[in-house]
Length: 433
Image (cartoon, rainbow, N blue to C red; front, side):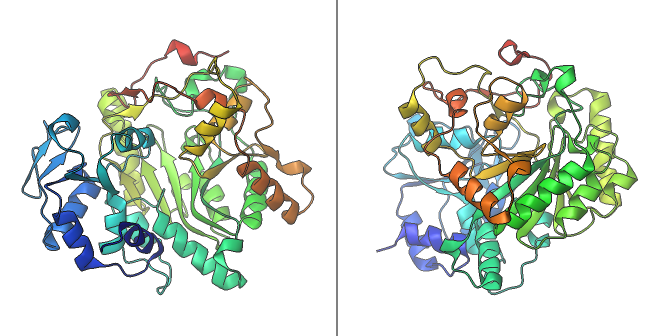
């Protein structure tokens, strides 16, 4: 009998998979749907067809614009038309802004597999036997190093071998975000980092030496990261962004660096100097569908400059949808049990580092940085005396049953979405307090 869980585990960790068993298992379903006809869904569908797996149709939010993919009809998602016990869905929506969309889908009870698992199993060349080359991750449009369990596993294996440790003894995280600033060149109505919520006097661009100290403290305390994100606000509003990236490159316990930018900023050639390293990807978030023509031109100019300078620059598909972040107030009926539930389903197994503090999630950072509540959901780097002490504090922080900031994320009614990702404007629930 085919073991789907073993297939998933082997795919994530770079081991060989049961190809014939997988083919028979998927073809046993009456209906096979690939949800997402973008880069990932197209690549996964092409590979499944090569494996003689029958694909019934694609689902995609933009089915009116892309009606055929790999010769297969593309429709908008409709759960009511299909028997959940006879339908197999391969979820290929790669937009990192939509983790809650997947959670909502999973609760409907359909049999499913993440498209990235298929990508790991049949397409990705990275494994524990080969020398790690992050350019593979950074150059492809079909996948992203962010959230890549296979890359994370391979980095863990590499560092465990180097340190002569078993992987279960390592302190490792999927990713870390080093925040360079809390200011942005856009004012997105539903910004996940709540840039519109900052008062003028709260906005700051971090001194280079502060960022260097934070990088050194965290990179030496943690055994492995899959990805290092250099984040904002808008990171290219920091004039020394290239120096920050080059400082991270001095360490070897990570797979790839991703610099996230909205592209609507006057990027200089000096800021791109050194970013042509193949371990770095500059990810241009494509909100142009909601921007002015002037902003669109600036986006295109920034993207083309990065490409011309030899940087691995990638732009996502135009983002059609965003999850709406929680408001700046606690849920009124929250208690420890509900916060524990919220923590248990949290989809963010990584760290945020900003201004000398380590936070377990973005909401914890925002609660503190927006001066809403000092709830202790952080570690002050400058109060730690040794690397070992910092490791212990990070482990303790991450292993808490819940964080006080979970009280802001809890949503009994499920997720909300906007179909205008990157829409400019201000929602009253995020007004500065």
